[in-house]
Structures are given as C-alpha cells and as structure tokens.
Image 1 (cartoon, rainbow, N blue to C red):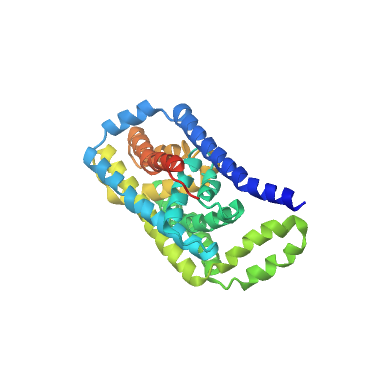
Image 2 (tube, rainbow, N blue to C red):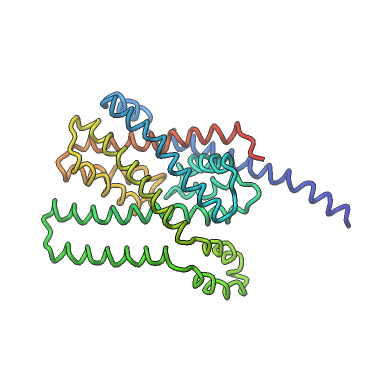
Length: 326
C-alpha cells in the first residue's frame, strides 16, 4: 500500500508540470489565433505610419511606468494576500497574465494566467488576489469616469440641472459607500463568511475569500494611490495619441474624452475580447460628439490597444516559454 502511495506521489509533480505546459501552449495558440483572425495587422501598420511619430514614441515610452505601476500593485497584493515576496515570480506572473487576457472577455484569462508562475499556490487563491488587485483600478476608473460622464452630458447635451444634480448626488453616495467599505474594519467580513464554511457548497469558495479579510486600511490606501497614478498614466497615453492623430492639442477636451472612454470600456468590456471593439466604438462615439473625426478616434484607440495590450502580451508569451518558474 505504501509503495503505491509513493508511486502516486512521485507522479504528481510530472502531472502538474504537464498541466502547466498544456496551459502555456493553450495560451500561446489562443493568442496567435486571436491576432490573425480578429486584429487587422495591415490596418495597424498603416495607422502607425500616419501618426505624429514623436508623440507616438512618447506614448509608447509611457508603457514603462504603466507596467511598473501594475507590477507595484500586484507585488503589494501578493505580499499581503498570499504571502509571496519573490520579485521575479511576481513580475513573471504579471507578464504571464497579459497573453491570457488578450483573447478572453473582460480580460478574464488574466486571472488564471497570473497563476502559471505560482505552482505552489492554488489557482483559486491567485484569482481572488487578482480580483482584489483589479477592484481598486475599477474603483478609481469608475469615480473619475462617472464625473467625466456627467460633465460630458452637461456640456455636449446641455442637460438640465434637474438631471445633472441627481446624477452627481447618486454618484457621490455610491462612491462614499464604496470608500467606506474599503477602509472599514474587515472583522464583519470574517464573521459573515465563517458560518458558510460549515456548508460543503460554500466551504472551498469561502476559504479562498477569507484572505480578503487581510485588506486593511494601509493596503487600501496604497492600492488606491497607485491605481490613481496608473489611471492617469493610461489617460496621458490616450491624450498624447489623440494629439498625435488629430494634429492639434485641446488638453481639456482630450482629457474629458479619454476619461469617459476608459469608463465606458470598463463597463462594457465583458461583451468583447480584450475590450477590442468596445474601446474603438466608444472612442468614435464620444470624440465625434466633441467635434473630432472618426479616423482620429479609431487610430488613437487602436494604437493604445497595440501599445498597452499587444506588446506586453507578446513579451509575456515569450517569457512563458523561455523562463523556468520552478
């Protein structure tokens, strides 16, 4: 009996290695299929050639702080929620998530893609940690985007104060509730989920969610601060790209447009692959309302997609097969 157990134990690492390799292969194949069938590479090349090269280069350089801020958030999250402190593994995990995110609605693949670098943790633990990481970015985008949307409606549709004021009040109430929850004591969270652990249906899910009770005020403050920096870095990239294709700069208008478009993308992303189409459609709708051409909106949006999504995904795909994460 003991011999059979030893044989099974010896085989488990090999099985696990094969599973991870299969997942890597699946990510690679899916990304390549996505690029060839959903992205018109010829249009992207012509788009880049028609831009202001200097501004395009500046926006591309901003990918570096963009990625660093994402790494910084993920590092804090891994340390706090799963106890992982290895910088190399955390960085690899971040990049492994990019190619897996490209071909899935709402970038859902990123949630399991990040887990490929952490073989000592359950995928469910990494998914919960990734959700916690993403929630702060969604919160910041929603707060700033909601304000931008109300300003957009008020300015370009001359809405009545009787419409704008209730919208603003509703927004501030929801924002206050969200912020209060984030900075509140999480003991109630533990008390709520603990009884559910007695039921088999909720036990495994509840055990994973209980790591969220570690989200203290210090963690929340850091994550909101970094998420705000990340949002404005992303916003600046978009504004620069709009200027690159419009051949003029209207800072206030471009900032408002970018904030509203990023907010719309966040809300509508579950219905598209890697937000492709949603961002472009939102860009054309809002920017044409503001007096810009549809080509400017489309070109800037496609360029942002290539810089912030395709480039990191290709780097992540390369790392998936050249790095040994054992």
